[in-house]
Length: 611
Image (tube, rainbow, N blue to C red; front, side, top):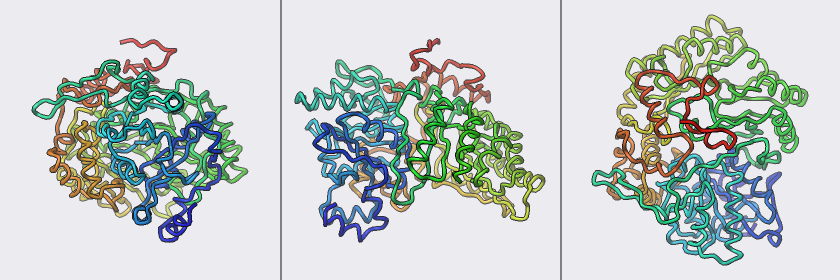
């Protein structure tokens, strides 16, 4: 650490964000490595260090001989101001070297509102934000993550995108980059060869052409570029890299515990859920594997809590055996076991008793919609009886705080559906009054709503988003329909959801808007401290675009989408069929009941793929 940096750290909040030196960080001899990568997370240290994907890829790349992966996070405003004033470029935590010293700079993009922070981090590193202005082979700037299933809004800034799961893909890409360095390839030669790696999308080889009304007419591609780029998956999770020596932060973070990934993908098929479709097919770790890795991770970190992670953890087949095995080991050591948001149709007393053996954690259920009609539309496959039964089990077990998550603005939603959220919360309160084992402490039921955001690669990718004014009207209706002080109502800021929708379904022209927002001060836009709707609207107007075109416009089923070049394994025809089922109010059974032929099994070499 330089004396200048030491002085700066005395003047900022939470200096531990910027020092490195954490337990289990990986430091290598620079003379012994021939390729260096900076893993950049475009949000604060507390958010990035809570991300399991960072820990997995950090460990997987560092396990490769001759490669060194370091971490870098977006600085908070006070630190950025000091760095710019003192001329300190953005640096990686392990070595404190500036990002310009690295061969590769990889960004994790899991949320669209982080895009402006990517541009800001590149600029703070002293690099041009646009790929076309970075002509040298290194540093190569690329991105991966869930948001990259529509890479077009960020296409002007990235040299390439890695699509899907990165444990194997990222290492393959970096090996090719090392070869390119050794043989003095040009950047263009490297990028052309990179397209031969399955899962790599190089946007400069694709040129969108638009109709007069702003919709996409076609995408012209250069010779040799694949027509579509299919995401990569890890077929056997037990053979993939699994982090058991995670970096332990020196300051408090959002999820300060061991995170144990039990499976990938989801069997459910909720029609609004992008992750549920883009992470298909379902693959599970074996219970014995998880028990071994969990114990190692806890011993290597000193944490006193472990949480089980997946899109639907309560659907993990081996959950009872895993919970028992973990608690047999954890309980004597005063280590607690926690679960994420649970499904209301398979929450049991037995599971509840297991997770509260050491200490009782909060409970969260996500019915998503208040009425059964609307839950059928979104294919939630949860009934009111399921919700109330699970709440009864929780209250009988001694819980007196409960969170319920819903969305407003879902396709076909009516005022009756909105009021049904309040009625359901009242029934949950009545269930507490009737069945609670501990009424002396009272009860707190928190109802939270967010604004529905239509996402690419889902059955609702064609849908329109409700306007901000309409969302706030529904918020007011719901708020006025809740009459008990035991029910607390929180709602998400709708302007952020509007911009998220525009970016989520945006095309390559969105890059100009992003750059305009950033040049006018935009960064850390997922934080209310920094988000400015006026700045976003001004940028859209300056660049001749309208966010309503992307967010509020319903698409025709024959429209070509900017993200159609990306193949996540689920057929567009299947998504269209699921959309029609939604409007008919028909539910689709989960993958355990029947394979509906979505196409994701094509990604598994051992399985056939039938129409």
